[in-house]
Length: 118
Length: 113
Image 1 (cartoon, rainbow over the protein chains, first blue to last red):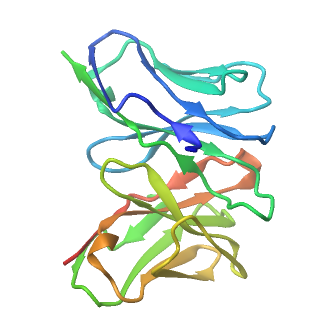
Image 2 (image 1 turned 120 degrees about the vertical axis):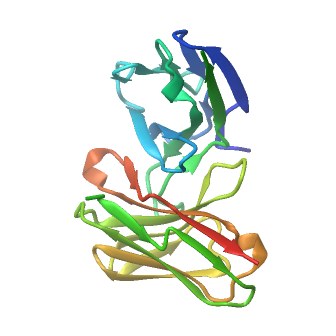
């Protein structure tokens, strides 16, 4: 089973509208971290936002917020007031604790290609 | 100056050649990682290192080797490159104290003909 699932391969959104990018995850560990990265066409990976599994409040960073629904294992990214520069690939990722049996590092979803239209 | 640098940024090589991709960081982080990204897919972990003496295989380590020459340097080698190793390769660093956020280099685009 995939550990990170992003069900929207592509999305078209009008400029200035809010956008929700879906992400569901699968882990049996109570301690984990969830991340969103943006990858523009130039290729670099840009960190957007982080949510820890024990955090009581949803994370926010400027126009980005993370809608964390722990019981549903959902960590959707919300972009308010979208801009043309938001057009990019967006990746959800999870980090689980290194336990000696598993691997350190992030597990990524396949991404969502977001296109903002004027 | 960038905190995580990768050289080269682009490389075209032929099947069977040995290739080394280099990564350097000035963030002072102990943990370093190599990932590859194929078109339409997310990043997948190749190798990671907690420090100079601690190197571990990731999800897709076959056909690759690594060397951690110093805390700041982590190299990825393809001993005998094959076409399906054509991909975008990323180096990343992290500091456990910051909750696991990974800081990525700009990537190396490798083409194996």
